[in-house]
Length: 518
Image 1 (cartoon, rainbow, N blue to C red):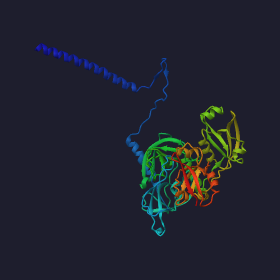
Image 2: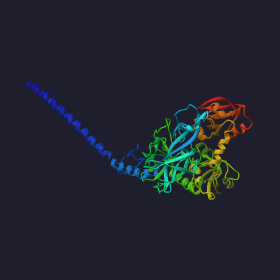
Image 3: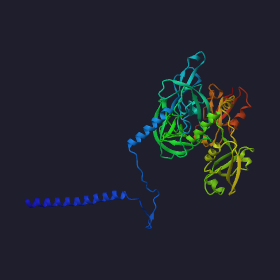
Image 4: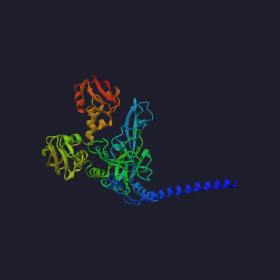
């Protein structure tokens, strides 16, 4: 029995010794692995040589959570006094019997964010067959001048009958007036009389910020003033189909919701580097993709609205498009940089006088390289009217040069544009726009031409026929409609009481709609 116990003891000791040996080897390998992790990464090629890493490791000191929190707190404390709540109201009409219900913009992902709207009854109009309603819109604004000038989004105040501003820590609102609006950039300047000098924001340089930089968004989402959210710069120069003159946004994942429109995007230096204006949202709320107008653009617009009440832009007189691989190959270009002239829009334009022609690829404007059509548009519109600029372009594989004196871009002011929209509605009662590539992309259609319904007047012939916003009209009485002007011209041939047949594309399906004209 003793001998048996002795053997069992010896066996157990042997197993334990083997386990300790294996454990020691494993522990040594872990120590070696951890030590190796501290060494520079070296990639060895199959031929025995050494390859250079794609990214060289850099030493950096990461802030502690307490330090980062202190920075956020300091920036928020510095910026909140210059961010205001903007509320507007507008009289509208609706059939009797409607109660409270939500009202927002479209749910297209690249459109301006759905502002927080609501309808309420206005008892002063009870005697009519339809009852008066007041549409209320909530947004944000940035104090940009101590005299009470506030920068916000155009879509916050565009059709407002009354604008009220609530200052931080204030318990009452102050009436505001519109100084100027700029629809292409979706910016507006309003003014209040606070009876004293106000704290105001400091603009930063949106050209020096980088992807990955921390930012804060401040505003009044869902009517919750002085709300601060944090995130990073997700992308720069993002195009979202907002128009040829201003499709250049900062993308951020800082939470932006309805009501944030017009509020600032702030750098860790406490500087305004963007004006929050749009979100990508299939559900009306933030999913982490928001868009801000760069501060350099906002500052230029603010300065012109303050001094002139409108924005004056340079005009070259060309339609341009990006250079893709097919264009580059066919035109013998080395790469896909530049802006290709698809059309010289006016024989008396600066471009025509400088000798530019369809098919030319502009590669440099006023000493700055032109990487894309958007960059050329940005350069031209930011250049002062009357300035003589030097343009380099490629024609038939040869680099050519020309001088052009920029003219003023002839954009209608808001009053004339509103009158034009009203007259365009005509006997149908709709406002229409051309089906541009940007709008087609937003509507997810493969069609290349047509007239897009943007507004439908309540009670109009189109409304009675259930024409809807974003319907695409392709034909009237079987005659093709290529653009908004085609539809306007065609309607001139009809008189009130005539029936017309519209060929309409709606959400990917073709339908025929019969309309009796007013």
